[in-house]
Length: 296
Image (cartoon, rainbow, N blue to C red; front, top):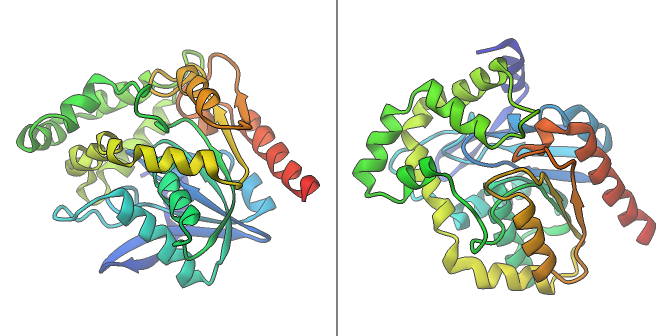
């Protein structure tokens, strides 16, 4: 494990959710910003913008169960509902009643669930704003890669076998494919990702967590309705070159969401904009947040 990754883990703490340890970092002062990370890694994805975010907010950044430095139980019912409960329970535990949210990838779907709960009056906290980064907000235009389909759309025994057989080179290659052509991850970052994936034997769960990507359809009408009806300010900061959820996802967002706010990053930025273009992401997010205060 690299020194940077060791330090990230050392600065975290743990919270118990349904009998399992959930890793989270909390740092900074001011209004609370909740970070919801994506699949298959963890909140370390936000390391490049972490110092700036913690200078603006009290940042709360948990690793979802099954990922990162949280427990990775193999016999567990992973679901969007449970991930949403994890965030809500942690905020309650910390005594936090209002949050801004910054989310990415799979985290976007969990945030959609939380927003739908707020619309129905069943949330235990108030969402003040949402900034989405690249992710599968709308299943009809999401473009999964072949490895995702092989892992999570095949019968469980096949998915389990593929998870077990995945090598560092295959995982690194699949990760690098969704970065922009000029912003590929370094060898060091790919090594960190490999360590995160394998922590607590997490690689063996890749097929199971990945199934959530294909379990969104039953939720779509409720989630999209919540996004269309909400008065919570939202922005979509998008890396257009992302083959999974790039410019085509931004275009769908524009079609479906009234009074949409979209920031398209430079054309060559891919799926991990917070790592590929951290300064541009920070600028877009900061301007969005400043407008909230100006309008209020």
